[in-house]
Image (cartoon, rainbow, N blue to C red):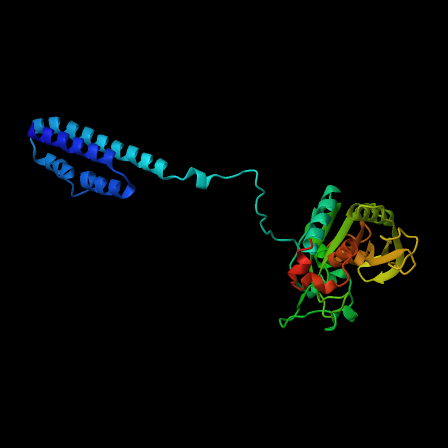
Length: 340
């Protein structure tokens, strides 16, 4: 009975002291005094093991009840102190005030152009193909019908590695060679990626550049398909009607081969200073895939036809955004990047 009375006295004193506390420091000290490991109340709880069974049945519930009341009083007082210490006026937020603009990163125009190209071609049912940037002679040259004595194999054009037979790929055409070995026609793909050529840099040339290869193969693909798909793509990309002109040319991996021109984006083909009065802008090479390329991929000769082209991202970005120096894309100048 004495122990139960002692528990009640401790509880009443604790609750009264807690309710009278004026700040969080006082409350912390009271919590330690009445609920801490060395508190008088905790000593009583430790003594339960030395009591008789009958005493424990009486003292135990009283002790637990008192302990819970003290804990509840502490938590209640803690919330009261927290509410009274909060300066609502100082913390008030005017939600009508415009927020501070945060700086965000900008995409390089090359990334923007690549995303647009991928979106347009996937909407036309094309798949996206990829391949390694370090290539073997076979995929970089042999599979593309490039003769052993072709100038493209010279050190002046290609970055060869010390390990024999390896080089940084000089065009994304190497990706189409790999793709054809693993897939059977019909198919249509584009292969966007980075290329490397060992040449001097100036406003229109870079040793590192991005290109996308387009390849369509089937049993009845013709030049008309090439021209139509190209006009659809460029008209969508430049957001205006664009016409395509093909001029005969030679590339080892296509036969026949063409120089690829589009109508001037400034004058629409009427002739201006941008196109030097001709009405056309030269873009790159294209043509019908050479049958030797098909046989290198394991296809029967003359069973399939297809067309391919390779255009540079930088060239397209320069035309679309009126950029006059190709070196700006890789120069790392944030003033350039932040414009996009």
